[in-house]
Amino acid sequence: MHFWQGFFLYLAPGGLMLAAALAALQHGGLARWLFGITWLFPPALGLIAVFFGWRFNRSRLLFAVLVVLLADLLLRRYGGAGQIDQLLARYVFHMVLLALPLNLLLFSFWRERGLVTGQGLRRFGFILLQPLLLLGLYGVRGPLIVRQLEGMAIVLPLAGGLPSPTLVLWVLVALVLLFRLYRHRDVLDHGFLWAMLCSLSALLAGNSAQQAFLFSVAALILIVAAIEAAHRMAFRDELTALPGRRALNEALLKLGNTYTVAMVDIDFFKKFNDRYGHDVGDQVLAMVAGLLARVGGGGRPFRYGGEEFTVLFPGKTLKEAQPHLEALRRNVAEAGFTVRSEGRAGKTQNNRQKGGGSGKKVSLTISIGMAQPDTTRKTPQGVIKAADQALYRAKEGGRNRVSS
Figure (spheres, helix red, strand yellow):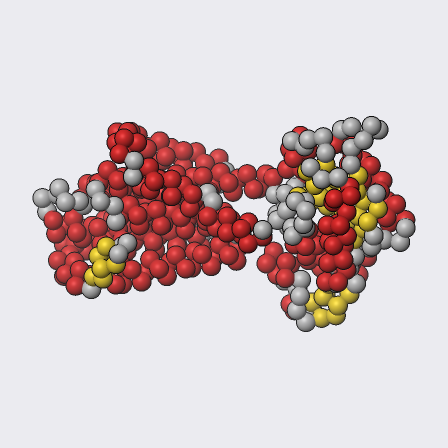
């Protein structure tokens, strides 16, 4: 189950959007209809990117969309089989092949610095200066560059004929973006990866209409990634990466008549903070959250606040949910917690989630209270209150236990 959740994390939504776009191109009638309105996509997507870049402080989104649409514009203006100057067309094609992945990789490392700040304006200048430099280089070394690149072409079943340096570059950039996505789980990095692959599909497309459509899809993937990032900021707790209180409130509205609510609290959490400091407290929270994320039985964990968490079991009775909560309690107790030395403590989320390293191992347990709806508590708020009372009984009964 967790494998498929992880796989879906890498695939959606960018991979699914690319697959849908490629499938649409195989349907003749749908493809012709899409080609008829493709001319609307670049200006519309550009305006949307400007709005999101400004309103949500996502300058990297705007830069990436700008580069993708600029690549499409240059290829339509100077590239393609219909151009009279075929040497220039081939040169532009190769330069876009080289510049596009490098730009997307660079943007993935850039930090947000705003749009109308000095840093933002310099980045705009960097992007807009590239076509001028490449066209200037064409007048000096254009024919030689084209001959050298095309002399190193490798014919692949799916990629057609690509120069070997270009092919190596795309593979390396894809691997770096994939590694960054694995390390940081940044939604915008996800967008960069799939937008880059969609752009490669556009560059290898059979005709200019397909190329323009796929470049627009690449820009749309980036915009959807920015929307996903904004949603995550609003509904997901930054420290633990679990859904937060707002997400819990929405989930409560969707529950049926049968469900179980569990309130989870870390035992003696205040002592951890007082003795080892708030950084260690954050590490404890992140570690427990990681174990909560793997709870079985269809349980959905949320960070309720402070050291308290909530687990929803939609469609499960107390009897059905209790074994999974007992397993969670045992997993936390067996894992314990290793207090790292000061030099290894670190403040990054990645370090906090590891929760290991050199240092002494201390006991860590949780107490759990659970409840389900009945004639006296018919609303989710009433069930949560009952689960809170059960949690209090678990604390009073000696902690490290599940109470109902």
